[in-house]
Image 1 (tube, rainbow, N blue to C red):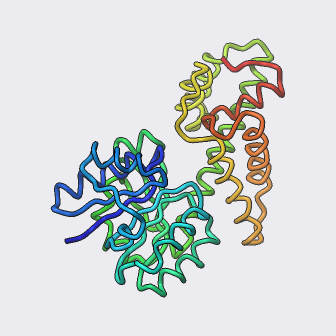
Image 2: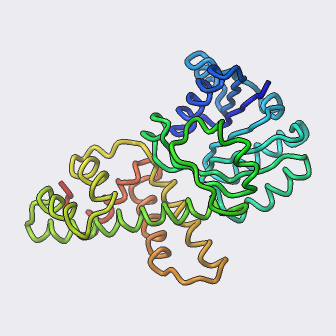
Image 3: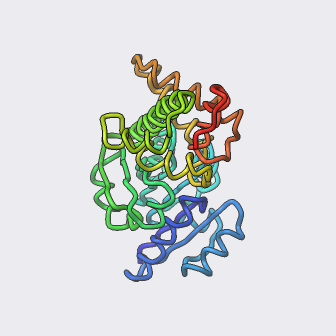
Length: 294
């Protein structure tokens, strides 16, 4: 019987693991869950029919999913599980990790007969709850095909290259989110200081060439309403933009706009708070311009 383990039950991981548990129950498989705070794993097991386990028990699974804050936490978990891993297993890391962490983790897992796929996800908590996440996967294509049926939380799965490529695409994708969010916020701050109604301005922008996900789905619903619902943390967006900036240096590229955006998001994280919703980064723009976007 195939055993699936999901490690990390945060805002994204909890609903992702719930989809996995339902999939496992429907197909006669076993779903295990682990979280650093065991009470969360116990609550997940009661709610969704998974089984809360220790890391040593999770290490015996055929497919291991991780969804942790950074690659550093993944390495910590790997150290604890390493002696107990099952040969032939596949480790699917859904963390928004660092591309440079993948080779070292892959080497450690390969030594234990385990294949690593870096498979970060995009779609936010709404996508996680709906089971419609986009998964960008780096690593052996044959390993992806073996586990593809088990990606119960995914709406779209794309193989983007070899090990580390998934992490790279995720970092750049989120850096682009940061660019459009910040740039749109600056533009609206200028309009606010000019006395323009921002709701009307967004209506125009969203029917014109300046539109983006930030203008269409984020700023109107979260910023102008002053709600800033806690979904994707500002600290995590700043971390991902920083990874994109790191990657630029590693490949000897030139991406000054990405680097500047990473620096601005890091500043916003410190001023506004790392646990605030990522759209709250625009509160720093508000301070810089002495206006409120509403």
